[in-house]
Image (cartoon, rainbow, N blue to C red; front, side, top):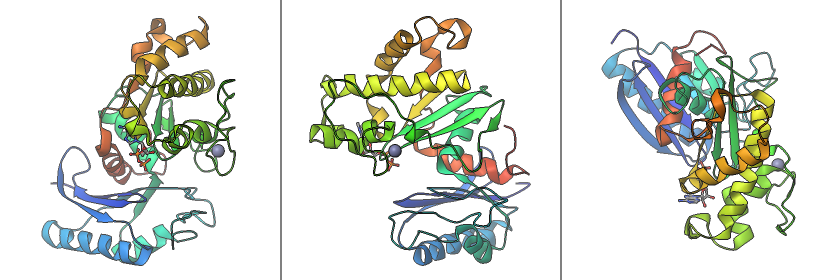
Length: 301
Ligand code: ADP
Ligand code: ZN
């Protein structure tokens, strides 16, 4: 193997670490439960040390991490975890700590942006330079590829906190700690569904009215994204989207919301415009390899 890269998907429950050639070939992979930063990153470093002893030195390591996270290289707090309830992680200087332990360059982005890149390269967004990736799980997150570039702004988009109008029959108070029932995360994340209906989302039957309302909200979100960034496609993943019945419901509602106006391109093929993810749990780590192997901060895919 020409060049060896490391990849880390840092999550709230687990850190997935891997080494490989940066493309399809993964030589070794491990899953480390997330505890406090010191314990977690000591295990991460140990894995990479073992791997470099076996396979040789790493060119760089790509890190796709949970947020909120400062990914602006010009910022004073670049590479640090921001406000989070996870014990020990708020304000933690993640990139500096990893560079000290591993002594290799670290390429950093959010877990969501890594998944977006991997879906664009290998998955449901193949060939789409204009793509939106959404994850509907414990929170709602999203990444945007525009003309082949990840949209970052001064940090990264927070699509989960876009405001959508509340359904007139929905009496739920909302689950977002910042925006209550005003933002899409407050209305349509997994915990929002659970709190509204008093039952974990995965236990609600496919015919439950919860899913009509869920499709209603996700269609509003997709409509707003089609109108803002004009992607070829929006792909949706995360625990909640395991409810496959949502896809045709969202497509029908999106068509109704657009009302013949402008979107999506290519003859209003809603089947192609709104799709499930293809890589599932693999997207984050594969995207981390992609950013490790890229030279700059925001390389075109
Ligand atoms: P995370 O967002 O923490 O990375 P997930 O994407 O798995 O993890 O999202 C977890 C959320 O998804 C929980 O709120 C859970 O209730 C919900 N969920 C998990 N599986 C399903 C399912 N099969 N159907 C509907 N909701 C699900
Ligand atoms: Zn919010």
